Image (cartoon, rainbow, N blue to C red; front, side, top):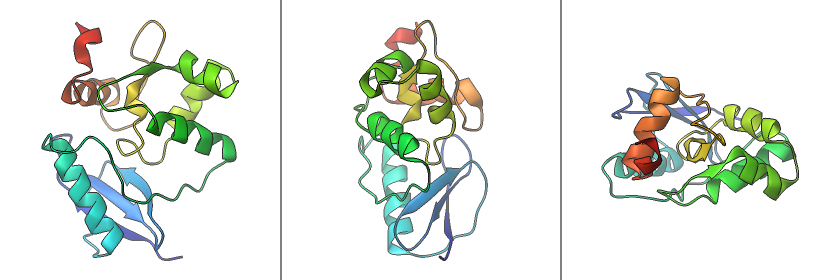
Length: 152
């Protein structure tokens, strides 16, 4: 299957959306090509709107090429509304798995921001973040969404 890229400027630095003919397959912190496909145009517009404070939900199609467990964690993360957070333990209880497995799945999220792993926190702290900039990026995203009251 073909692979297409769309570079997006963001307050977090250069991002690149990666897609195939079906949907978005990855979001990476790097400069990328500017291929033109309907899915990439839609995703780039939605990301730009998100960073401008004009969008809270992403509706662009995604295609996850991962295990069924990873898909279930991504679905649980996607259900966390803008400006809200859950803990690894919350998701673990929901899915009937150990919290550590949730943390590993969050760290393996191929489409951060669109699938909001930044909204999942540790029981006693922020937890990690796999995107470029690590926890500082997670804090920026939470502040952007107005979920930073817990950080004060």
